[in-house]
Image (cartoon, rainbow, N blue to C red; front, side, top):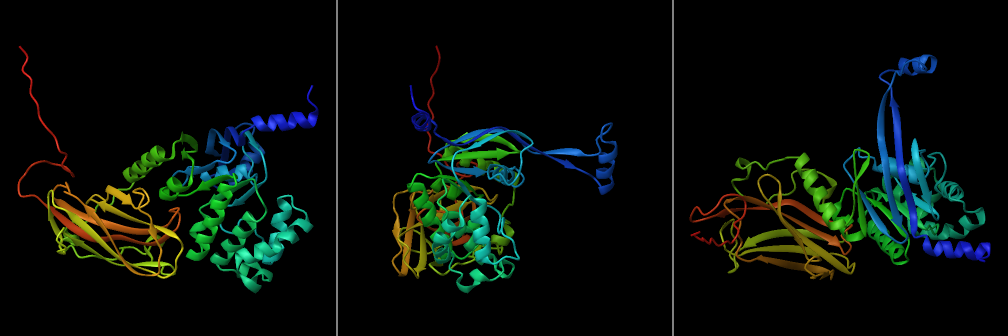
Length: 427
């Protein structure tokens, strides 16, 4: 017979799941006006004065220990609600949840922080909530201060913090309490690039140590490069779970079908390179590490041009400057048609052609051989990323435009496919 301690050890060997979610649901009661809430309290036995909104419904999945699982889904799909239930800051309406190990979570900015407390006091409070003793928290305080890099502000009320300082301290707390499970929900989108790179390095270290990570992001490129599996939430339910590449590709197509933003052909007739047309964070230059200086489209003879013939070579020349070395970097190019649909997106990591981030000015060339795009106007996106693909170093959207021409009418659509006709006569 096994002793009780030995039995627990044996069971632990065969228990491979860090998180088990079974038929989890969360419903909210929506009242059209405050009076209905009072009516429900008084007369609720006979009539409902509210409508039900199911943020989650019958969600079931398991996360194996040591796996990094991405969670994707459009806004309102239930991602944040699910994470709050897993971290037990929110109660489910139905279903079961089982978690093996200590969870550390970095959810929306500043969640769990008391704005009236100092940074140091919030560290102690968060550590206590996670079950650490005052002695354990005190032993880790120097690591937290060093990682956060907010100096004397650690002893100031967090209500005085900038968003960058908030996320620095929150992430420093989350990763320095030796969790078994780390949950990150889009929080790394805030803060300067140097700190993002530092956080990514720490997350990579966690992954190498065999810790479990739940990573929520709208950036499918990051999901593809960092996660072992992916869960796609749709309308509060698990729509798909499993292979990262196939599911994220399908998700991207789904999201594109929901947002149609055609490129104006009349506004692009000059085909001049332009900066991004909006001021989104994606397109703002981040020049602490690297900046894109320009792009030139040339033929195989090096002649710069804006119009190309079918089956002609097209060479994209990217001029960029590296200010600080961070090891390997990734460059990517996307060609987009007039309906804002990706025709082809490639990057140096997929092609096993990683670049060294040696400081100085550089030119990267990508040659598209015998390009088979049919007549039309196309735009070019350019991006540089750190090695994992989770931090954009610089990104230029619709940075250049070119027109494809054809001397003769040979096909319709977007691209020409080589083909051969055969004919067999039946006797």
